[in-house]
Length: 342
Image (cartoon, rainbow, N blue to C red; front, side, top):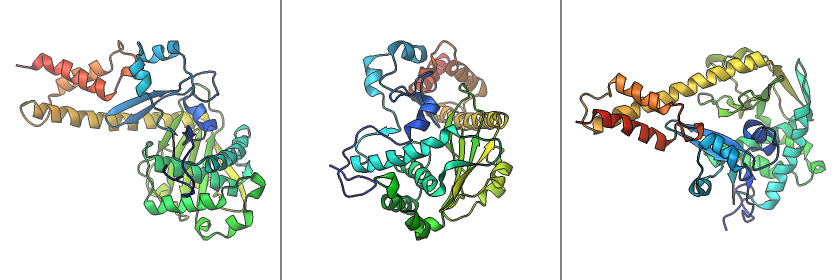
């Protein structure tokens, strides 16, 4: 058996590990009214694909609302990109669970001005580092740290994630050379509605800091105390709020900067527009390549044919779970192009 990706010593014998802690993941994609595991229903959006996934406890009638007719093959092929087998050993999985359980207590605390979350920044560093590192090594969410960054976080987590909460080495964390340069800012929408769209996105243009949008949080995480990208790149229109947010470092109390639902909805609109632009860019490139391969005139598909394909892709006749997948793109493209075949 392969070795645990955290400790590198014990067998990776744990199945069903959540890359993103369940207490956050359930707020992003669980079906309405459900908080337990295995009730997820979500989508991974890629440049030329939309991959749906669902938990094994989602009932067939609920799946049919999203997919229409659901087959045994659909169920067999279903795999949640953020739930994995044989990544970690059971002992390390329990260490993740311990820090997640402690950090989950902060969910209930909110305020209208900068406020203490209720945990130390040492717990915050371990928690957020564990989220970023697991997302990176999983490679399914649009971010991959450098090998050096991955190893730095792995060493920190393996050294300081405790087996019991009272065993957190506060002094060791404060004095550790790898941790001294790490800092983060944390912002949170304090009046998110249940029906507001929730996200799990790394901003693709940010490196100093890494910017993670997860549930109703915005995390800016630095390896070297360098927040320079906030000065010269747009972060969904909230750069000024990020600049004003307190910096959390080891051996202090974690401070969160709140923002309101109006700002959250503005951020969501920007995300949707950016995603649409990326998706359309990929589609148009695909259409042009198909046009050339089919022997069309010039190197670009005529705009009126592109518009017909897009109309077919967005047809209300198709269930959302069947739209925008690679199969849907291929079928819609071929359907329209056949009309123009000699």
